[in-house]
Figure 1: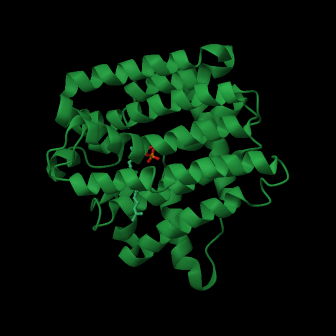
Figure 2: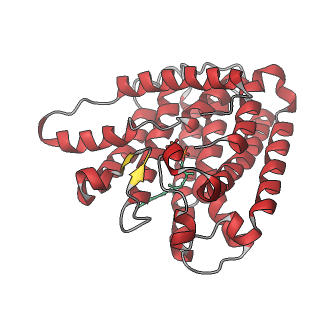
Length: 302
Ligand code: GRG
C-alpha cells in the first residue's frame, strides 16, 4: 500500500477499498449448479486482493465534482471486473504466461486454461450487465449513464486496452522506438485508468470543462502508472508485488526503462504527476484524494 509519508491517503484508500469489496460481494453471484466452477474461477481472481485503484478513481472522480460515490458503485465495480478479466487473459500461456498474480497462482494454474479464458469473458460481460442493471439505472439519467458506459467500452476495447495489448504482444522481443512504447502504455494501461476517473466525473454530474480537466489528469496518471509498473519490474520485490519481478526483461518487453533508461523514465513519470496535479487546480480541497493518488503512483511498491 502507499508510503507511510501519506497517512491520510492510506486511510482514504483503505476505506474506499472496503466499500468496493462489500459492493462487489453484494453484486457477485455465489457459485451454484452447473456453472459453479466458472463462477468460482471468476471469484478467485476478483477477490484475490487487488488494490481496487480503478473503482477508487471512479469514486474519487465523482466526489471531486460533488457527486455521490456510493450511487455510482456499480460502475466503479464494473471497472474492477474489466480490469480483472484483463489480468486473467494477460496471464494465460498464449499471452504473458505468468504463474503468479496478486500473490496467488494465476487463474489458469488453478482452474485450467479453458475455464480461465471463460472466467475472463464472464467478468467482462458481467461488467456491462452491472452497468445497465437495476443497481444503477433509475438513479442516474440514462444519457449520462450511456455516456459513461460508452467511454468505458471504448477504453476497454480495440481503441484502448485491447489495442495496447495487441501492440505489446506483437512487439515482444523486437526493438521498439519511443512512439510505439508510449502508444502501448497509453492504450494498454492508461485508457482504462483515464476512463475510470473520467466516468466517475461524468456520473457525478461534472460540466464539460471539469470533465476535460479530470480526463487530462487521468491520461497523465494512467501513463505514469504503467511507467511505475515498468520501474517496479526492475526495482521491485516479487513478494511485495505479488507477481514475478524481472519478467519484462526476460520476455523482451518494450518498456520505458528499456527504451529511455531508468533515470529518464523516472523524470518523465515525475513530470507527469506534477502536471496531473496542476490539471486539478479548479477543484480546491475536494480534489485532494486525486492529488494524493497521483503522488502515490510514484511511491507505490506494488
Ligand atoms: C482479449 C484475449 C484478450 C486479452 C486481453 C487487454 C488485456 C488482455 C490485457 C490488458 C493489459 C494489462 C494486463 C495491462 C497491465 C496493466 C497493469 C499495470 C496491471 C496491474 O494493475 P494493478 O497494479 O493491479 O492495479 P491490482 O492487482 O492491484 O489490481
